[in-house]
Image (cartoon, rainbow, N blue to C red; front, side, top):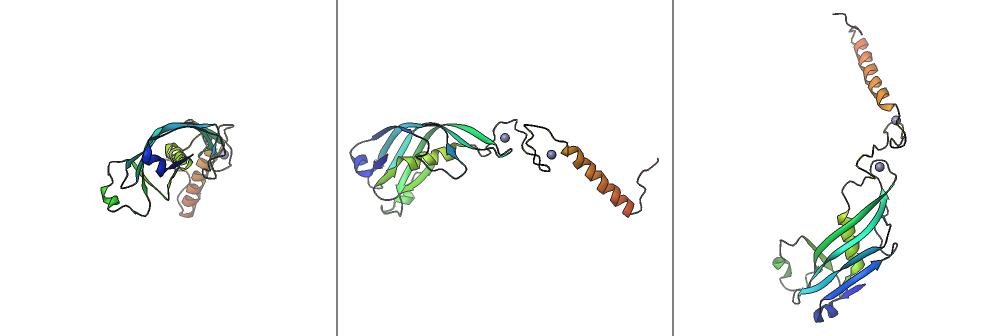
Length: 183
Ligand SMILES: [Zn+2]
Ligand SMILES: [Zn+2]
């Protein structure tokens, strides 16, 4: 859906959309797993500056890979958004200095308006957690043998400890210290 400046000059634009998976391109590692529902309004809050405010609510489910175990994981996204957009290039005189610094997010648009899908993509990406894990309890992949520890435990941590001891023993024998001490 395109939100045109010309229409915004006349009235507040309301949107209520269901975007099917595949319509919005996220980054390569992320796909939309269910219909994205979004509703809200777009308003021209300053005609002279071309300042557009877009607010509403969005809901969908994303699919990506777990940062720890690399298995596919689903991430429900439910977000309220309130964004301000200004024309890029600063065509409006003195616009930049007058932007309300308190506004949480300021974006820029080119030409005669905004593509709603671009806004929705941005909202989804911002709403995703910094660390994407399949579950808080995910044990991840063993760095030594590559075993997914959620499926099966491996014995690697024991070997890692043994390895440390053997290095210490080797160090001791090199420096001529006795390997076992009798106090
Ligand atoms: Zn995981
Ligand atoms: Zn292992």
